[in-house]
Image 1 (cartoon, rainbow, N blue to C red):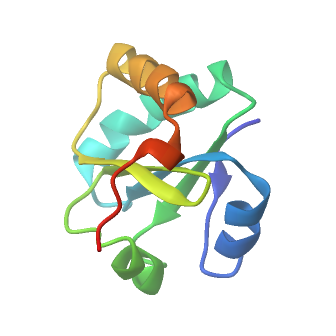
Image 2 (cartoon, rainbow, N blue to C red):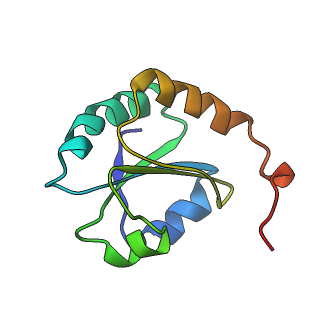
Length: 115
């Protein structure tokens, strides 16, 4: 599966149909986003069983706000509808590969819940 465009219109369906979701929040004017894009694409190609999406923060203001995006690029990972990871900045490919492995192993039922 290649990287898909995520919008306010399709986010609910994506959340419903995918156990693990990687979201790259980016903008066209953002130089670090341009550096991260090919890394993200390569990792997505290597893991076709995981949903990899891109959210254009210029077009998806509400979605960016819902995910509390304050800087870009920001990678957000959800598992079973729960955010398990959020990090801003360019993430090296070897770190992304490790993050994929950790995302697969996390049991969201064992995560502490904020009250």
